View 1 (tube, protein in one colour):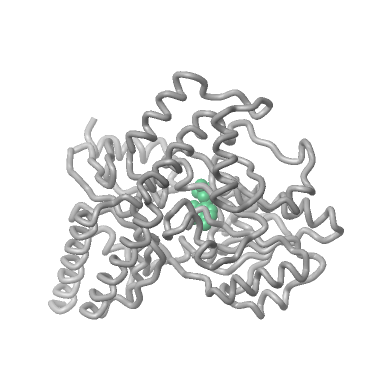
View 2 (spheres, helix red, strand yellow):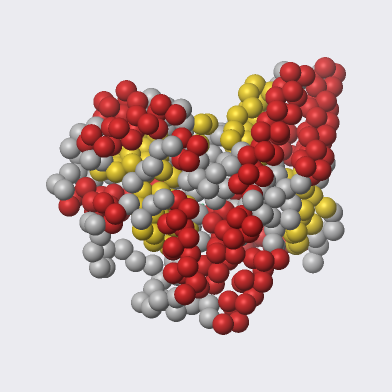
Length: 400
Ligand SMILES: *Cc1c(COP(=O)(O)O)cnc(C)c1O
């Protein structure tokens, strides 16, 4: 079947929740993608910060194939060797104490909210959750309640017990803290919100406020975690440890798996039956995740992400000197946003024409979250293409 036929069938059958780009991808290897017409692309999006070790890494593929032939699923009523190994490794790399596996980011945040409330109620506090403006924590009912109003439109009644304060504003948090508050959730680097970094003093201040009030501090590292910023988690740059940490996206190297981690204090409030999941962390998903984390260690990809990210940001900043359309370049490791003075969508589309997959978020921001093992050559060719797009746009504007 041809690309256009597939596009039309998709339009006919799939709920129109995505304004899909009419490109059909059929194969991936590392940071290369091929569409159904056998055209090659370089992937600067990695399935939205998911394929952190590249598409179809041989070790991840082999782990999934081997596990699929042994045992895919058993339910969480029983023990699985691969899940135990993953629990131990995740606890170790996050410096948290306990883990619970889920199937997605939003589910991890839902779990985080539940255990924060469970703990708060155990010490006689209320269940309110404070989140930040411009944040993104998922698309389930509770997670849209934590997020931007635009995602809540038409889905009322929205669960209550949630309120937002401006990001990077400690005073705003101090003003809403009361006995009613159970938890504060924040992305150390806002992803969908346009790659906005928390200030160090802000996260330190949140830690202090939470300690003083016995409120759970929740870091949502679903996008910023798993080596992306040059450490296992962005929190490691800040030196601030949350009470609860959420992970997903890059955790499975492409396999849907999420996790929530917490410290012993929060875990102490959880009893049998308080939370559950059928699929979460099943052997198949756990095998993909274990293989992904091992590849990150073996190939030193946190260091790679840091070095390549710094180099790329430097190059992007020199492009900024030349093209006034670029307002600001922000990021950490390979989580980079190029904020433009105009909508980023046409730039993203032009890049696709040139054979590069990127993403436009928060209207004006071009988001780059490639695989951590993307090569210098691939990044160099992206920079050339990006400059070409800026030149084209500039000439178009001048001609008008
Ligand atoms: C993507 C994302 C989520 C939601 O993850 P899903 O797997 O789409 O449910 C939550 N929080 C952050 C920070 C994210 O980037």
